[in-house]
Length: 237
Ligand SMILES: Nc1ncnc2c1ncn2[C@@H]1O[C@H](COP(=O)(O)OP(=O)(O)OP(=O)(O)O)[C@@H](O)[C@H]1O
Ligand SMILES: [Mg+2]
Image 1: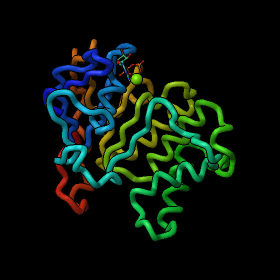
Image 2: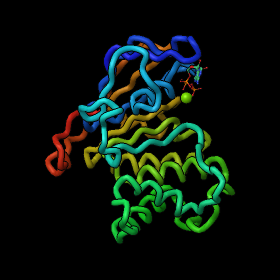
Image 3: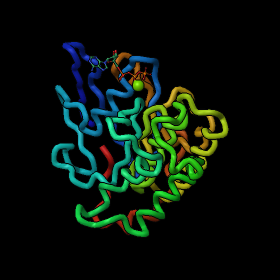
Image 4: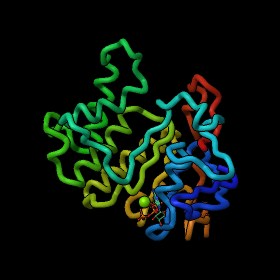
């Protein structure tokens, strides 16, 4: 994103945002409530229009970007529900749809990816339960599993640890550690680095809709995956 600016309800919520997430980065976006973190994440993904500047995902504007299977997004609040009650497994399996041809049924690879994602968040034993009956922290883990199931190259999580207990925060750190070791990229909105601290390569702090501080903590893990990508790997956003 270059010179990114977002206005909502006539108020400038983000301005002058220059941010480039490099391949393999595990970037922590921090800042006080209302500083614009969720807005920035949504603007980077093209879910909110910019009122100035420009942004790209793997070299394409969000409107032209097609390869959504490469991107996983865990929103801060659940847009889950929507009428038909779905099981935990169904919600997690919906994370595969960007990878599936429209006419093809779920393959063994799809099912295996869903199983791995359920295991990673410790919800394998709840797979048949109705997702909307789970606790808030469990629903958050369902959304994380949905994003993991898509096996994205970049995973974007808005406060993945909010309302999540210490054991499950450590479980998420293990999962993200595996992804990072594979050279995948993560953009995480966090209030505290907590158990994720050893994985974080960069922190970017927002204040009043502007980048107030940036630090590089460590270099990204060398990527063994880049050569295997079908498309030239640019940088996210
Ligand atoms: N749809 C909207 N219309 C108008 N203002 C909005 C809208 N969404 C967010 N805002 C405002 O934009 C500012 C930034 O909100 P945002 O949700 O990005 O903050 P945040 O940094 O994610 O905060 P938190 O830590 O509480 O999640 C806030 O002042 C908020 O009131
Ligand atoms: Mg937020």
